[in-house]
Image (cartoon, rainbow, N blue to C red; front, side):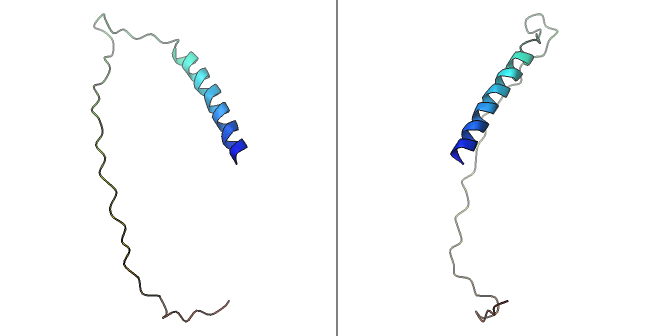
Length: 68
């Protein structure tokens, strides 16, 4: 499993490099007024995860399970 994760990471790094070289070909007009300005971003606020409900549950048929 570790070897698969390592291989996937290497492949992803190579693909990211290829993508970076492809995107580097494009030039945006940012100073001449006719280009696209970068969008302003605001930080995302994440809500905390809800507390786990640990109350005991009632067993579905009274616990009288049969073998198949």
